[in-house]
Length: 330
Length: 296
Image (cartoon, rainbow over all chains, first blue to last red):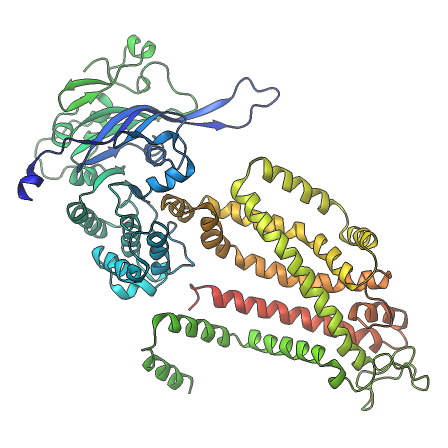
């Protein structure tokens, strides 16, 4: 067991290949020139190894959550492939997708909106266990109550309604819901962002404990750099629907390469170090996803931008064995 | 006294949790005094409609030409009408027709409106477009004109009148249910239900539908009222209940002509329509609150 844990996980559990998700905006009318599209996720590729935690960071609206939903097939991707255990899941039938839900689960951000107010916690969890036939009927109650204890709630909470819980407890219920089907991969979509800091830490620790106990793999989507640093093995940075940098956590936090990542990380407040950090301040705002800059999407705000950046989109290439970035000048 | 009772209830909390849940619901309902009174009145009304021959002091059709348009007295509690019939007895018998008309036509409207609205709202697309255009077409007619046309096609009589009224009420329910579903289908808990791998019908019936109940309950109780009135109008125009069978609506419209000389002819059925509608309304509110787990 010990040896097993120490071994570097190598098997690729999930592989995303040029995933795209475009949303049409407005209907093409009689006089409108052409159909406009929001390119929420545009050509993203990465892989997740079994047993690791991949953190995804980026500003609001950069497509992090859309990517999560597209991987889960909650929103059908516009293009690209999603390989789960070697099988392309982006072209499955409705029934096959339902079966897939046993393997991939999601934890949502909003602990208030993501639970049905009219169902007791037990009814909600039992329904899932029942539908997927996880355990025989007579063991359902027991199974769900154990599940509640697993996430740090009590067995008698089975009979309670969501509004009787605090935000942190509700998020534990969401975790229990994701765990109920014994998934292999859980996508945590801003799972702790709505919680206050002390509760955040508790939930993060719970997630790590559960990961060990059930051999889970996480994709951890967040805008909070310190949370991602705490929980991830590898970190990907997104900007305007593209992944700009992907590296091992330590490599990423100690040696960021892409100018956007540098600017992002320089914004992390640091109380410990004496030396004054150089703060990279970006000019302007994130461009509208309706009107994406030509070439490199970051050129309009990049301190290093040249004419080449305006003309040519950089390739997402390997810098070394554990580090990838999309920039002409790294 | 009240506090003492509550303390003892807490002591007995060793029953199974599910039973306590239902006990809690019942307790919540009983706390709403208005709803309890309204429920009592509805039960009384239905009871007296069922056992009308035993409750009514006179034959509702019996005419007594010596007592035309008598005002209320000990003998005739609500007076007599223009041909000497006892109004109280006619109100009791009329409850049969009016309650049927109200409840059954709304049941028809709910029975069609809820499933159609759920499907249109959840699946959207082309089907939704067609359903909405049909409801638009139905709603563009004045409701009475449409009911009249339908009743005329189906033929006179109470059953056909109820069907016609049910059809006229249906578009409102389709629209209401659809709008509610549209609001809920984008919510995270629905997405979470889908992400849990539940089938569409389960997401619709178990997760979305219960969350749309509250406004529907209100709409349904109001629709019962308008159904009773519509039945009255159809009867007045000769397409609903046929005379001499008494119905509140028919009595109300018959009493119109005598409002100056004998107002009680119209007032008695009017008061009953009013009390019935408001009772159903208050009772519906009580049930809605009972089902809402957030109010404890």
